[in-house]
Image 1 (tube, rainbow, N blue to C red):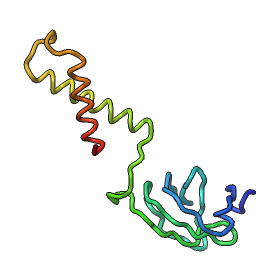
Image 2 (cartoon, rainbow, N blue to C red; image 1 turned 180 degrees about the horizontal axis):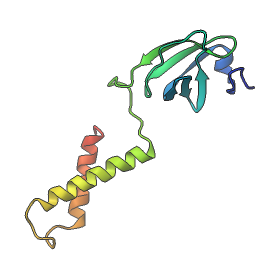
Image 3 (cartoon, rainbow, N blue to C red; image 1 turned 135 degrees about the horizontal axis):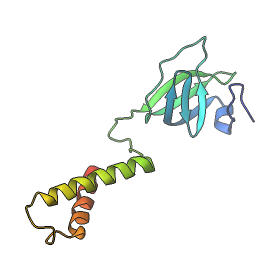
Length: 131
C-alpha cells in the first residue's frame, strides 16, 4: 500500500510508528530502511543526523509528526555501519600508511616483502575498527 506522502506502508507504519537508523537526510525528510518519510510544510521539525537511531510518529496523512532520537550517531553503544565504499577507503588508507611506514625502516626493497606490509596493515585496520 502506498501512503499519501508517496512511500509504501508496512504494518508498523500503519500504526503510525517507524523505527530505524537514519540513512539520509534532506530538507524535506529522512530516509529509514530505504524509504523516505517527509516533514509537513505546515509543521517543520528539526531533523536527526545520519546514523542516529530514531522513532518516528506519523500523522494520519503519513507526514512525520514527531522524531525521537533513541540512540545518537556518535553514541559509543551504537555500532557504526560502514558502506562497502567506506570500508574500501579505510582499507586502502591503512595499506598506504603501512607501506609508507615499512619504507621508513630504511631497509632495501628486497628486505621488505608485501606480506610484511599486509600483516602490518591488517593489524592497523583492526585497531582502526576498534577490535
